[in-house]
Amino acid sequence: MRSILAATAAVAAMAFTAPALADHHKTMDHSAHNASHAAMMMALVDARRDGDRARDEFRNPAETLAFFKVEPGMIVADVVPGGGWYTRVLVPYLGLDGQYLGLNPDMRTSNSPQMAERWSGLAEKFPAQLAEWGLEGSNAQGTNLDQVDDDAAGTFDRVLIFREMHNLQRLNLVYSTLTGARKLLKDDGMLGIVQHRAKEDASADYTDGSKGYLRQKDVIALAEAHGFELVETSEINANAADTADHERGVWEMPPSWGTKKEELKDLGESDRMTLLFRKRP
Image (cartoon, rainbow, N blue to C red; front, side, top):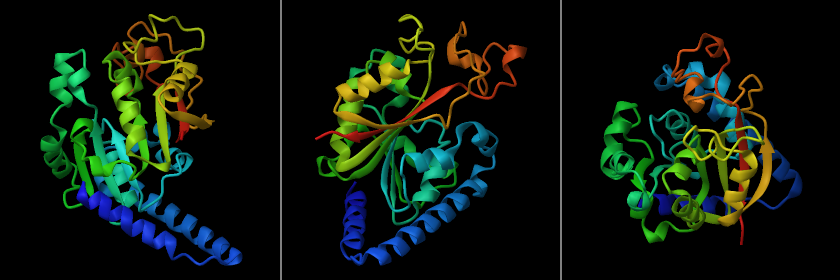
């Protein structure tokens, strides 16, 4: 985590020395936008993503990260990096001036011994995963939330949670993860969430996390209750073709397609909410 703190200082120093002329700022903003766009295009065509690219049309990584206002050079935590789909976008996009942290929850409060074993010890597991994904030697690290140094508090620009809020809910990890995220973020830091979206009238039994779908108003309420305020919502990752009422939940939809239902195979991926929050004072 020391390298993350060093990167924070470097970014802060760059921001401090920026000229104050208004028209120069316009030029700088335009240049920064162009540089960010170019970095994203390079990240998306990176050969290490050859096996991922088929999902881009459903997961919209460029548009999603732009909505979350993620920029190269930022310090970003990715909650439950899992198989690394977003890791392989974020690490090259953030670049050598940025920092990526794959962040698994504090599993000491988990109600599932199986998941506690699977998600614990990320600091030890992550280097091998980075090597497998061709990302060794990058500014990327991985750890569990309870292993993050106290010095990292208030140093992160973004914490992102992609399609994992249902797991946090069903595994009793919402409180520790969201309060931990708030502690990591800078005063102007932001939380981005993408989550499978249930219908607004879905039953409590269907939205307890076990089906993968949550109601948007419930996710917003959870974030707000843990120290965040909603900035904006987006339909970037919406899919009106998903009825979100499947017997076995989201895993009946592609790419999991758990029941192999013919009528679902061409529907794309799940209907998803995309939410941006700001850390509340």
